[in-house]
Length: 251
Ligand code: BJW
Ligand code: ZN
Image (cartoon, rainbow, N blue to C red; front, side, top):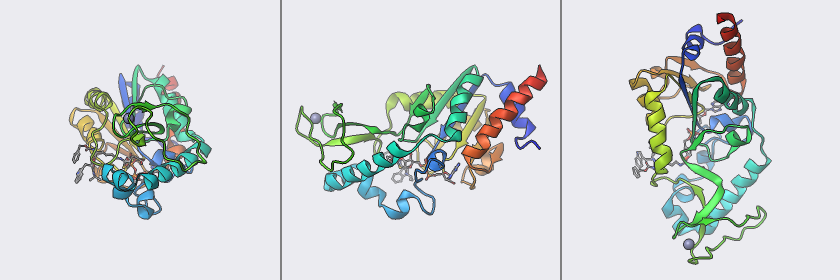
C-alpha cells in the first residue's frame, strides 16, 4: 500500500525547484540528540551557558569541552537512510537546495553537495576575536582550549550561537530559494528557531507545496499541505521509491 499522498508525488513530478530544510530530527536516527525533544540537549544543558557569546565569555573552557564531547559523538555517528534519501533527491530534480540547521556535517558525509549551513558546523573553528579560521587539527581527547596564533584570543567552534547573526550568503540564498521553489520540505525541525523558522512560511506564502516530515506536530504543521508523521529515516526512502515508481508510470 502506498504511503505517500498522490498529490505530493504529482507536485514533485511537476517541480522545477525543490528545497529541503532540515533540523536535528534528521540526525536523531544516527544517535545524535536533538535539542528540544524530552531527552534533547536543552533538557540537560542550559543553552545560554553553552550556546551563546556570553556563555563562552564567562566560561570558555566549559563551552569548549561541551563541543569536544559533541564532536566525539558526531565522529562516531554515521549518516542514516534519511540523509541518504535527501542526498538522492539532489539528483532527481532540475534544481535542488538543501538548507540545514544541523552542525554535524552528516548530510555532506551522505553525499549531499548543494548544502547551505545556516548555523555553521561543529567541525571547523575560528578565533573568537579576530575571526581568523583555525586550521590546526583538534585532538578530540584533549581538553586544552586552543589559542589564536595571530591575536592570542580563544578559539571557538564555527557554529551560530543565540543572538549571533546567521552567515549572510547562506541566509540570503536560503530566502531566495525558499521564495521561488515549487515544493518545500521541512524535515526534523521544531521550527522554533528564527530566522530559519521563517523559511517554510515564506515558501508557503509564495505558492510552494509545503511538506512537513516529523513524527510530532509543530507550530507549523497546520500550514503544511502534507504532514508525513514518521521518522525521516523511515519515510524519506519510501518517498524516493514511490516517486520513482510514479514517474515510471507517468511515462
Ligand atoms: C524527528 C525525528 C526523526 C525527532 N525524524 N523528525 C526572543 C529573545 C531572544 C532571541 C530571540 C527571540 N525571538 C527570536 C530570537 C532569536 C533567536 C531565536 O529564534 N530564539 C527562539 C528560540 C525564540 N535566534 C537567534 O538568536 C539566531 N540569530 C538571530 O536571530 O540573529 C539576529 C538576532 C539577534 C538577537 C536577537 C534577535 C535577533 C541564531 C540562532 C542560532 C541557533 N543555534 C543553535 C545551536 C547551534 C550550535 C550548536 O549546535 O551547539 O542551533 S540552537 C539549536 O536550535 C541549533 C539548531 O540548529 C536549532 C534548531 O533546532 P532544530 O534543528 O529544529 O531541533 P529541535 O530539537 O528543536 O527539533 C527537532 C525536531 O525533530 C522535533 O520537532 C522532533 O519532533 C523531530 N524529530 N526525531 C524526523 N527521527
Ligand atoms: Zn585571533
